[in-house]
Length: 210
Image (cartoon, one colour):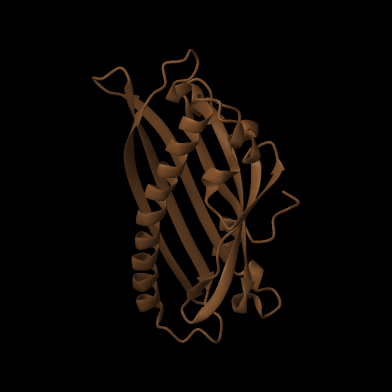
């Protein structure tokens, strides 16, 4: 991909130096009351092509659509082990129109801020992530369950200024990542449910987010 700035997972593993790595997984569900209009069910919504997805559901500081199924998301700055950084993600959306599911994959990521102060730093870390959204029926035909399964892995080669022991950094990073994922997955489902309801009732305001 000509837009890629960071290394691939295979390239990262070959880099010299001590590496910090942590990951987290989260599955969360939400009940959704469906609209009765024809073609307005939750499955119909999840079958929409990525070009009709609302950028609002990605919950980033700014979201730029690069093409029909690729987005650039700039997140709010965070304090990462004493360094303020802003993360920029390149994400693709893949829709399974048969089962009515979608997957958001991070295909590239780079940082703005102190972490990238040295030349070449954007070639010394990787972020791997996927968020898959599915649905299932319930005993109530008017209610469905929407589920979100997320996985995130972050790894980087320790820079000289990073004095935290590797084992401690791995544990601390995993705790922070799990806490962030616990919050963001729930927020994501809430926003997605709100977007579904706006789509189902043909809310004209939704066109501003697509």
